[in-house]
Image 1: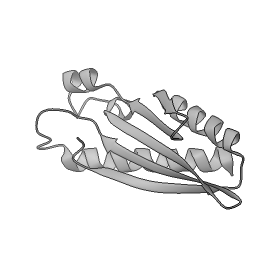
Image 2 (image 1 turned 30 degrees about the horizontal axis):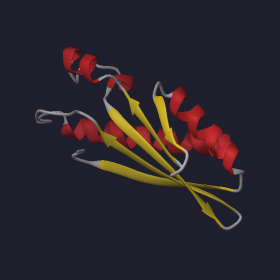
Image 3 (image 1 turned 90 degrees about the vertical axis):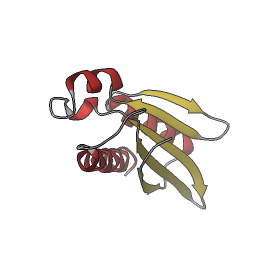
Length: 123
């Protein structure tokens, strides 16, 4: 269970298949392995590396190592599609004392990056 998450949306007039391709390309480009549920039109990707993050610590870990989970839900909206994005921390057990503020910034930054990349692919 995540302690915090950030949400965003992207609206497009592209076809469903183009949206799915854009989602997969975006999440894979960020280093995540995409797990999709096509029946529900949801796409989940685990981003970062929890083990390396814990080993190196928050102050030495690069932006791409911070453990997060990205969820994207594809919904039809009249003539187009809406992509609902949720990015949450995936630190797991333990306390975030001393790094919570920075972690929140990283999660929000990753959410913004996903929104920008999806907008570029589907714009």
